[in-house]
Amino acid sequence: MPKAIVVDQPGGPEVLRLVDVPVGDPGLGEIRLRQRAIGVNFIDVYHRSGQYKVAGLPFTPGMEAAGVVDAVGAGVTDVRVGDRVAYAATFGAYAEIRLLPAAKVVPLPDSISDRDAAAMMMKGLTAAYLLRRTVPIGRGDTILFHAAAGGVGLFVCQWARHLGIEVIATAGGPDKCARALAAGASYAIDYRSEDFVARVKDLTGGAGVKAVFDGLGADTFMRSLDCLRPFGMLVSFGQSSGPVPPFDVLTLSNKGSLYLTRPTIMTHLADRDRYLGMTRDLFDVVGSGAVRVEIGQSYPLSEATRAHQDLEGRRTMGSSVLIP
Image (cartoon, rainbow, N blue to C red; front, side, top):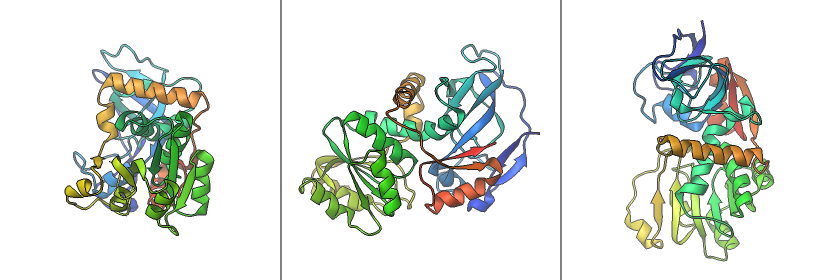
């Protein structure tokens, strides 16, 4: 019987249990996918801990994977048995075999490996909507990106360099700063030893940046506002350091008529045509060599607990994958 990770109640990494799960035949509009690689993301931690609510208990976490279709249900016309596919933003990925709607998967080109696909779908598509669909930025603009040595950050640094956008990166420690610089950041600030607000002001001649991309949340949110130039935008897309506390919206006015947005990948991928368009952009930029997929850690599916411990302990660099 195939195995999957199951969470019976919210909690720490120890609540991730590997169990046998029955997987039947695909229904109308569904496929059955034999998964070869599974991505690990901070949103998985939020679901496991209860910080983000799930539909019910028990549940299987995980939002992205790649594999081979081994059965298709009635009404499925554009996916065939034997096709290599990948998906993102679809709950239940920590499994050897699973059912999911055919509309949620995209075909994988031969140039993209299963591991790279699993490591890039959530992070790469997040980078795609941050850089291409959230705030108008382009060649010559300067942005600040927090936790730039992580999976999304490494995608953004490379992709931004390709687009001619200057990235000021923050990261924890000299090794991670060096990794962000190697990926394409123009400057890297070690937030453990430097005041990133003062450093950003210094690097921009006091002007501030056009946009700040903040996936950390509580630790950086308010100070990120101080890094923006007038009419700049703070893009809050995660909260790995904890939820952002309530704040007075007049703060945005007082600090220079600033903009604030809290986008999610699920909203962007809800439309099938937009999903396919973003995926094409991602596959093209990876296929061209402008962006490389950085897999820093690989774990057996049975060691999902360790993968979460490493991720929450900020001991990872680049993307992490589980191998069924």
